[in-house]
Length: 341
Image (cartoon, rainbow, N blue to C red):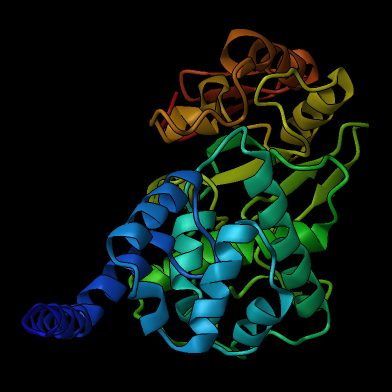
């Protein structure tokens, strides 16, 4: 009887200790799995925590526990209802902050699962924007008040399907650019966190969230996205944004060279609309945002096709040297010194 009493005593103490640790164990468990998704390393850590804290998962509300269980079974399971329920609010980016910071804001290459997941979300955002089902601001600060004369062209690639719709490209801009800046509460210099998103940029009567001014398709078609009076949030540097235009090539050229027709079309856009831009001011995104994670517009840009682009740009437009533009008919115009020549 004494032995049984001792065993019973320690079982009761263990149970009390387990209950007293539930909050801490649950917090550690939740931190490891992060909502509706988990990276492979995160899943392994969470499984270890389950062994260490076997009561942790059960301490959450039953609904959350069920979602966490589904996470381990399908880590990239896109839950449309979950995303749609949060996107219906003006402050959707706050309600989705954890997901956005972990899955959408980081620059990630060569991750097919993440790419598929992101595109499912982008497709939903495109659909909801088209149906006016994401609450947007009806007015806001003048985000283009710092616009300067254009003296720089920054080249990008979408790193997406080359036939991607313009609606989807705008959806990507809303999620990645505007979602990030509104969370940071500085757009630019205006405190906007918690407010519905406002870009002040319109195309065909609808508010758009493009980062770039021009989109160039692989077959050479050029599509105007933003007016030159708008500041595009594309360079990763605000001062550069204020005096540049972004030209993006549709497609993934991370480890490939764009078709000649696409490069030629980009050069034609620059030549026809921005002939005064100096040769040294036609640069790739990676030359502005000089960090290891930024390889845009691809690994071969600097070594190969940038020179092709520059040669095509100068083919018929003349040259710009020492602050003087020599036009195609020998006309000479004195310019202010280009900032990046």
